[in-house]
Image (cartoon, rainbow, N blue to C red; front, top):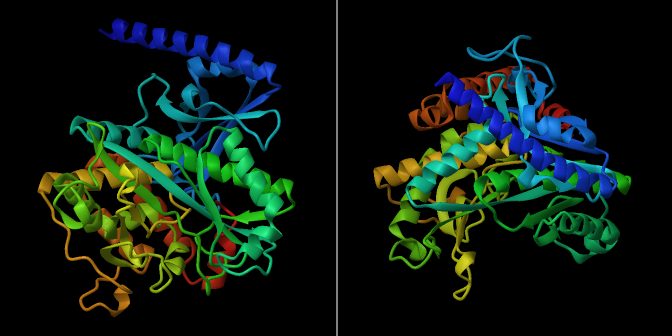
Length: 449
């Protein structure tokens, strides 16, 4: 049995190597010399190993090494430890997903691919965030549910110009820059839905077409790093942190999602609230119910709670409403003739979040709601700060973490090793910024993501 398993692993490695060899030849012909292999750690930072294109076949077969200790790195690159992960011992293998291999339009001579992480034995690493998202996607598929998700990416350009919020003046001021962002994304095969100036001075937002949950998280990484590269080409600095100015409106990392079954969108065509089917309502009710705990995933740093303030369209209250941009869960019915437009938007999350943890955890919470047959409460209209009985979401990471540690649903879904790493990193970052002013927290984190 051991020998059979080893033979299967060798055959998989052989096939990956063969596929990568063909890909490497194509990349070399296009002038690509180096490939960035990325994953996102628990603190929300995109980490990388870079390999020459000529080594891609070998790396696809056997991986490239990386210590598991990065799962307990903090936003400032200091290191904590957890009951299962910590210290200098051990090694993992990073295996690129060749289906996502992309030539980078804003970095000539470079390509990119996300990785899955494996033990030296070839077994999946059970704290791999990307494989967690895939497991939850497969769990939904076992229920006959296909998830389509998409992240909005918000950032602030430094130095900012004087154009007003949502104003054409800001687009004109940065027209070459905005055009190059769109052009680079489209050259990489990313379908851009829209790009526009946001509320904060110098702030922009781009939305891309939805994908499967793992693909949506991959796109979140690719979009951000493309914006970073284009910004640097224009002599600009992009800030992706939850807040740039603690007195202003921060950067959101909103997530849109819809549920599909047999080709039909379950977010419409039913007799539930806003035309939801019972499956869609229960799934969204599960997310809404779990939001206090989910904030430890989607609003993962003390800086997140400087952004998560009432009356800033940040989703600071545990409520939902159709087209309500103050509700934590906004439901978007979409135009009558647009089948794919109906979806839900989780507004409380920000760019410090690991997108793979976000997609996987949202699915886990939604499936728990489906299993329990949950129903949505009455929707909220207007600013929930004025609505009687509105429940404020956690106002600090410490409060969110207390809900997270009590969540049996998220512990079971994540597994003990990944769950405890998240707890340890969140506790350590809380301590890291204890006693710091909002301005100091903003300055320490705005450029780290």
